[in-house]
Length: 265
Image 1 (cartoon, rainbow, N blue to C red):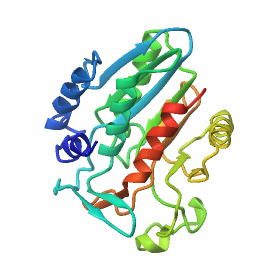
Image 2 (cartoon, rainbow, N blue to C red):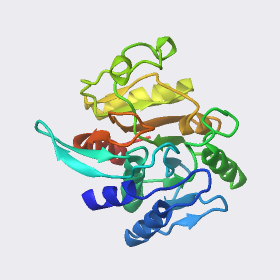
Image 3 (cartoon, one colour):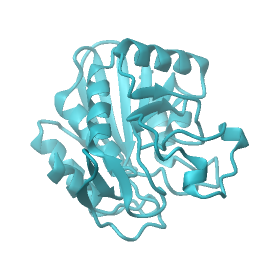
């Protein structure tokens, strides 16, 4: 596990130019694990496995925030837990998606997408999450309407106030509960059916370290919601996502993988 996560996290990729060694690394790792990846005209990587009418889409963005230049990565032992430190947005999501693609779905069909551009054009709702929009167009072109889309991405710990009441200019510890023990969250939903499904999945899984909350934005899950129910899911990571040295306890990563492998839609 450590070598693959490190291999992804230390390699850059630009969502603007759609170039960087992370792209080729992921393709090679997918081939090694029995997948047959294809690359569309926009540079998004696709893997399809299984068969049947019901399709679930798992998507993780490859690109790194443009303000991040230091791609250093390592592991530290804290008080009873080991953590990864580096650029985890969204190397952690890509790693999880890689493991899911390797195993494939237990039943039905699954599509695993490694999207090339989420981080650029953050201030432009029409262009932000550009690759997710490309994926939606391609799915519609192929006549595929997934039962669910899951945007696999790292997420923040518990908010100290409701999203709409938060002063986002405050320091990180004033915005988020840095003592949050939750491993993963389902969030990012903008449709009632997605909220209902997300809460139901968390209850059925029966693990108190996984939560469901209302915390959304103009991200990939929001784009996919134009097609079908969708939400974001991923491990809690501490630190600024536009800076290096983000911290993720590895138990958060393991919980995320366990939940997504179990997930019954």
